[in-house]
Image 1 (spheres, rainbow, N blue to C red):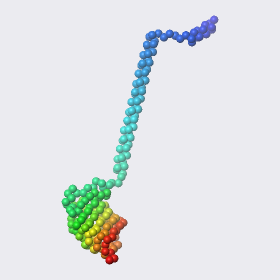
Image 2 (cartoon, helix red, strand yellow; image 1 turned 60 degrees about the horizontal axis):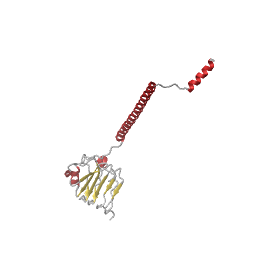
Image 3 (cartoon, rainbow, N blue to C red; image 1 turned 120 degrees about the vertical axis):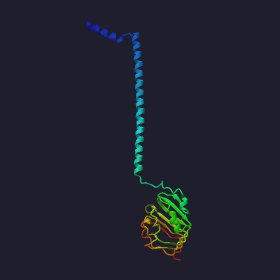
Length: 220
């Protein structure tokens, strides 16, 4: 009957696989080769895309770091690391000069007030500290540094040392200059002072933290 023939046909088709011709095999092999090449190209493109994406990420990160560095540098308070001493130090003789954190450090030995003033006239940069030692300054008179308009001491001078210089008296107006307002350390040790400086004498030094009078003749 027709139904039994369909069942037999179904069974036959399921048990008996059709033979593949040589031409079909060749076409299938070509398809496999082409398909494999296509997959390789896809993998290559994916790897290239990943590499490009990685490089772009690195470039973007470098740009962000550069911009961040510029912003931080701009916002940071300016320092004076680039302040340098005069090229011709002979103009400052007998004083010497070296860089400091907020300005120059000036050291003078065996000077008097006249020589000191002349030496410092050649300093046109910010000054942080002035040290005067082993000098002949028996009397500190006049408004110290008041005639030094070119000094820039008014904003950066933090320490003034006059030690081992034979100072026995200080005029009331010696430290009255506005250029000395920011001094924090006044070192007058190892001199010949017999009296403690009066409050009026130091009145203009509103930021003074330390006054060193050790090694003097106070109370003797």
